[in-house]
Every structure is written in C-alpha cells, then in structure tokens.
Amino acid sequence: MATKMDKVKPKEEEYAEEDRSIDTLLRPNTWAEYIGQEHIKRNLRVIIDAAKKRSEPIDHLLFYGQAGLGKTTLARLVAREMASPMKTTSGPAIEKTGDLAAILSNLEPSDILFIDEAHRLNRMIEEVLYPAMESRKLHIVIGKGAGARTVSIDLPPFTLIAATTRVNLLSEPLRSRFGAILRLDYYDEGDIERIIERSAKILGIDITPEAIKILAKAARFTPRVANRLLKRARDYAEVHKKPTIDGASAKETLEMLEIDELGLEVHDRLLLSAIIDKFGGGPVGVGTLAAALNEDRGVIEEVYEPYLLKLGLIRRTPAGRVAEGLSYKHLDKKTKDQLL
Image: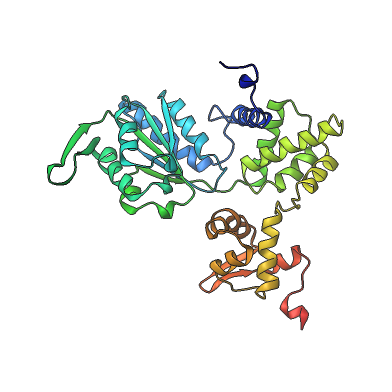
C-alpha cells in the first residue's frame, strides 16, 4: 500500500520539473515571438504557405546547428502553423527497427514526426526511413532465414522533421530525402539581448539594460544559454535581496558561475591553456588534445570548439588545432615571439 512518503517527490525532481516548466514557458509560441534566424523563417514561410494552398503535408525538413539554437522550437512552430499533431522521439530512443516501425505504423494523416539527435540513428534504422519518406511505405521483415518474407504497409501522408548537431554523420541517402535542409546560425548579440528582455518580462524580472548587455555578451550567441544565465542572475538577486538585476549583479553572477566576459567557462579556458602551455600554441591533433584534457573527443568537437572558432580564439588546420593571438591576449599569456 502506498504511503504518504511514496507520493512525495524528491526535491531534485521538483527542481528539475520546475526548470523544465520555466523553459517551456519561455519557448516562443508564434513566429512573431521567435527572435532571430530570419532566413530560416522566410524559407519556412514559403514552404508552409505552398503546402497549405495544395492542402498537403509539408515536405520533410532537416534542421541542423549547435545545441540550444531553437531547432525543437522551430519544429513545434511548424506543427502549430500546419495545425498538425507532433509526435516526438530521438535517435538514441530508437534502438531497433521494430521501434521505428511501431512509431510509423501509429501515425495519422498529416501527423508530424520529430526526431531529435537524428545523427544517432543507426544505418539499419535509416534504411527503414528511406521508403517511408519517399513513397510512404513501411517494409517489415517477418520471420528469419529461408522462411523470412517482407510485408509492405502503406503509411498515411506525414512529415518527418529531424534535428541534429552533426549533419555530416547522417548518410547521404537520408539527407537527400529531405525537401529542405536548413542550417541554424549562432545569434548576434542584438537578438540575444531581445531574447533576454522578452524572457525577463515573461518571468516578471526587473533587469537593467546594462545587465542585459553583460548577460548577452556571455551567452555564447545561444538563446538557451542566455535564458540559463538570466535564471541564475534572478536567483542571485533574490538571495541577495536585490529587487533589480543590475550590472553589478550580472557580473557577480558570472563570477559565481566561473564564466568570463566572453562567455568562456572553465573547460574552455582549460582547452586554450592546454594548446598554449602544453603544445606551444599548436598545431595539436584533437585526439592528443582530448587525451591531455581527459575529455571525450566528441565533446571537444561538438561542444567546446564551435564557440571558440566563432570567437576566433582557435583555428583548425590540417595538422591540428592552433591557438590564435586573441587566445593569448584573453588568457594574458605571452606568445612565442614575446618570449624570445
């Protein structure tokens, strides 16, 4: 029999649910609320309007770009605009072809299937998607060995929207079946400032223009990071009984999180220091760098490098990664020429 204690959620779960609910609250619900990515919105407007005129589902879409740039939000806005239900899954969640077959066979006409982290689909599952996307057929193999047979099931008209941070890991046959492949770029600081201002209004936070600029500059050109910094600045202001997040509060929040004025975190600075101090500024191969930092190579390539490259702090060369002059200046280190 369940006791009262069984029904009480651990504090960690309550905090996680609260954070997720805030993130959901901050998601744009209309195109007007979605700030930035204007080229993407223009392309999607044409695709959606044309599909509506023909009374057809929209073409399959592939969104790619760094994490936190709004791929899932765009998929939700497309589904809302088309007045279509959206069923969501992810590459790691689809472990067997039977998992995908079950999802596809339960789709209704005009449904949108959203697959996040699509680059983590294995090749066998991708092959099930080919006929499903192209001719709306689901081919299922029943039985094994000599007695095995293939059964084809007709699928209703549907749209697949896939999102990935590593478009190069998707096979060419899968990429070619998308009607549009759209790349999300990093945001500029002006758009990030507008996002922080909008989020602050939704959360009822009083914040000064100076604080908005400080947080925006440290937000790595990414809305998700901007909202995270805003929430932590709110926490800091509440704990220290400050009714308004001002410039000083924003700077102190960043110091508490060990984030510098460029938005570099501890791991970013460790990577730059390793290239400069251990490998003379480079070039150094990413495998060697990963071993020196005791870090996974994929994390360096997918999480750390894109932002450092965007800022011009490092450079990729055929021989490996090289620290640029701006890295030396930012970390207050002497270049080889200065040491001579």
